Length: 266
Image (tube, rainbow, N blue to C red):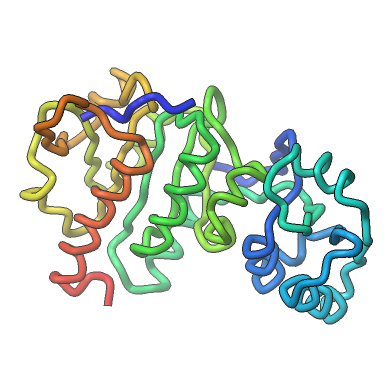
């Protein structure tokens, strides 16, 4: 099946248009993890009384991060009128990982590598939702392209509700070359399309990378040639496509189930 349309392996200092984390849950998760090292300042909405904001102030004090009370219209501007819930973190650009980082994470957990590759996902809400599911099922990392795709923005951070702090993300200039490298390192690559193995019968054991295509076009032809197997999500309704985050969730949980039964995620 093909997801529907919705509205370098090297570590380097990447930047995105917005370097803010918005929302109480995402902010708290950032301050409780290594992400706190990237926080430059915390903006809290003046006049707002909430236990969550008080807790964030205490965290900031312990971490020696400056806190600035600001009117709601300033937070609206910083968050691009997003649902900031009275808190915005000004943060250094999100750090990207390397392919070696992903393999190292799997090795540290004594588990077969379990990666997710996203081919030109353009909707930041899709990416954030996918990151939440990937974290829930124990994925060791996500691989995205550097061009023609969304990166790690504040909207992605907000939608991920903190998962962005736990899932390493690799940004590569060429997904096809990265796919070849993964295969050389012993991984099996599984793509998605309308015709293929029913995902309910899919054997997801061992070192695998699940590849999810663009919201409208699916997996690009050259990348699709690198797949070891194509899996599909059968549908009998009138709509023959799924949102990219929904398709990812179904496949990730199928892999999770298979790997748990095999004792790979213990």
